Amino acid sequence: MPTKTRLPRPSVTAALILKRTDVRPRLGIVLGSGFGAIARAIQVEREFPYRDLPGFPVGSVQGHAGRLLLGLWHDIPVAVLAGRAHYYEGFELAESTFPTRVLAALGVTTLVLTNAAGGINSKFRVGDFMALTDHINLLGANPLRGPEPEGMNRFVDLTQAYDASLRTHWKAAAKAAKAKIHEGVYIAVSGPSFETPAEIRAFRTLGADAVGMSTVPETIVARQCGMKVAAVSCITNAAAGLGGKGQVVSHLEVLELARQREDIATQLVGGFVKRIG
Ligand code: HPA
Image (cartoon, rainbow, N blue to C red):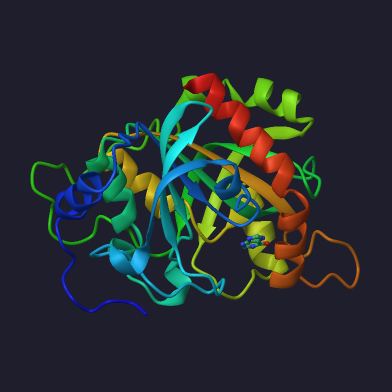
């Protein structure tokens, strides 16, 4: 459930973690729907349930509690957030992005965000992937609203939110994983209801290629913390109104497709990590 208490300093939670592991992660990965299998590919050295980490959000819709994993992936020290707290669950964005701040405090300089998204661009097929070039924040909220964190700027520049040089590595990683990857703009909505066809038509006019309910808050916070961001979506469904006559968008359909693509998604992100590491 969303915490009503004030959040601790991210550095305090990070210090507690660093005391209990020798892993010094440079790379952070946030696992969204469709990317959960990455957790099984990591050589985990130490694992922390979110409930043991002060300030971490507890109580996710997926029914499994979140875990922070520290270990090696392709010989690169990584910190993996397995389980994210969404705005639609009732968390404040400052709460749901607290783990992102802790990653920065652990020493992470590059953050890889993953998610499931509905395809808006007519070139996208279900099961394809999309490397984010930019985003549109339609959540109606911003995680930086509120007091300015010590030593940080609240007026964060987002002109290069998704690092262009990191992004060049997705293509080769996708080829090796036999995955189809596009580039595009992700539009974030609060959910939890799916969109109407009229909304999707409007989003297409606005310049969006895929729609989802996550990632944008973490990107904004990561940029405030000075981390480089790379993000990738698994296109799990045609967005509302684009799936033909009789289409129903369902969470089950999203999860089922995401599950089917988990192995490819693991290879894709693994290849990407190898290339940028
Ligand atoms: N809409 C919003 N979020 C989503 C979708 C969608 O169609 N698919 C997966 N996440």
